[in-house]
Image (cartoon, rainbow, N blue to C red; front, side, top):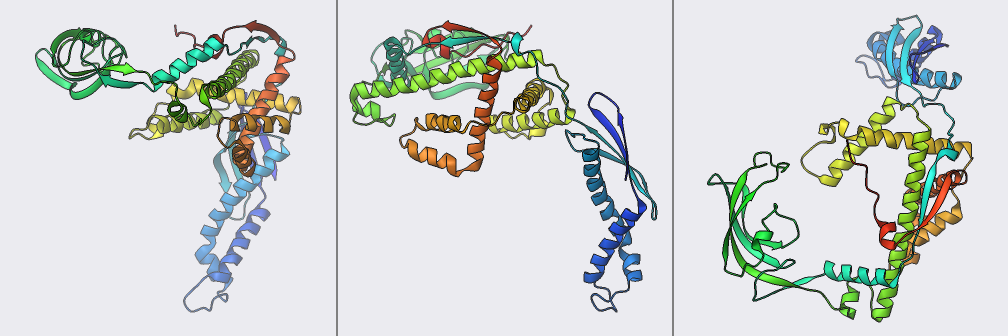
Length: 436
């Protein structure tokens, strides 16, 4: 077999492969012999059909089948021989496949970029530290109470945070518009659910009262037909209900799967969950800074095949997340290209750090991570056992641990600054930079 390789770009390779005629004919004959054993031809017993008849009837199909198998096999042999690492399936261009002659074809494909990860010393990381104080715990209990708020009918004028049951009709230029009317809808004042001025215009209203609100849709309103237009809303208030926060009772604790522990036991459980969230938030922020630093210090070219595959994965995830009657391929690739490129680049860099440092998942850390996740459940031992019985889930945890070990490897050489902050600041998500 003859192989020649041409570098057509930094990552693209154009490989010409010639398979000797003897090997081609051997593969064709092998398939014809297999066909002869099972072929049914009128006038002949099975297995007794003359090879001349078999060849006349089936040689073209056998030759096409041999072509496909030989292309696949010889391509694999060639990339191994040339020590190439394809990043995707090749595009194949047949050059010659005449009976009795060599099989010659061209395979065009991309290879994985070859690089050495460097620049650990240039990465700056701010590592936060915080603790859950009693005040933080008290605030969290109030959040939990508000998440479980109940509304009771009140015989008074509406205030912010009250829930109103309303009917309304919206008109633009005297004409009702689609989506501008509703009956019996529940609206919490101050929730920001309606356009500016709507909820504010109902403060002070009482049950049975009708109010007319003259409002203007925002210029950036999602419905472009209404953006910037003035509308008149006639609103009838059916009822006014005031919020009632639940008391910290055993019944309330039971909603969170915590029974017969009293207020002290509930506070201890909530604190434990907050501390787990805090550890994860700090770890995530450090990891993100390390990954950002690795990408900045190691610019690499991305194989198109890997980028396309990642774009398609993100398309599928978007459809699964948001639903709707849309196929993944209908979503524009440009929506996902930037995120897909970052993911691919990070995947290549992390894999190279693992390779350069001969890292293996630390099984003690794997078990510790599983136990940490399991502690959020009522039967943690069962959760741990479940992970160790499911290879796919266990390997996913091992991958996360391996990424953490990559982060630890970088931190040994990076510039790390420790900073004490409040619990709220530590768990606050990092805001993405504003677009220009």
